[in-house]
Image (tube, rainbow, N blue to C red; front, top):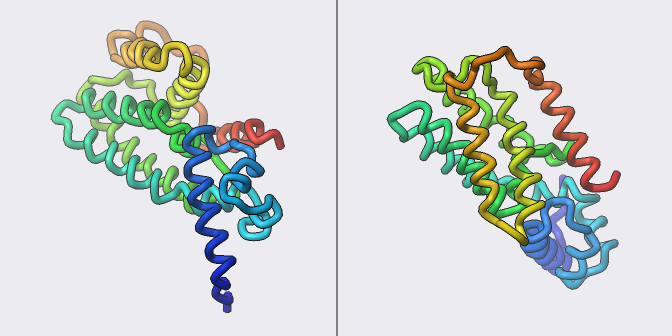
Length: 217
């Protein structure tokens, strides 16, 4: 049976999770852990002692935030009468989350192997995505060769544009996304795509690799 934390240990955990939330939001989920420990007023050793590493700290801070925001985006998308509008709104809202909160953007576009709760939430939202895509396909409003596994490509691309242009033209990602969305309409599907879509397993592997590279592991 797990022993309850002493008062000072519990206070350190609270400081670390609060500081992590703030630093992750400003710097993304690959922010230096030492910076988080400093912001919390504790040693890096205390952080590692309490959480073991980055993934566990992410899992302590991000799941509830991500779940609430992704659920709200899906609710708003499903309320749209036109299937294309619902699909496009969901994609746009996820991209807005990426632009407005680097931590949320990292959470929905990458995988952290030991952040199990976060992974479960991100996997679960794909069921709703498949529903939006199926409706848009059935209505003839979305090109037939677009799959749920293509959505991460949009998020990865937008995340890159957001980070590169944040200090110069923070809204230009919307222009890039508009071009992309226009290319997903059936009228744009003039030629066969040059490569097959990623499989769910390949998406998972790429996300894990992205998280590992950004953390410098």
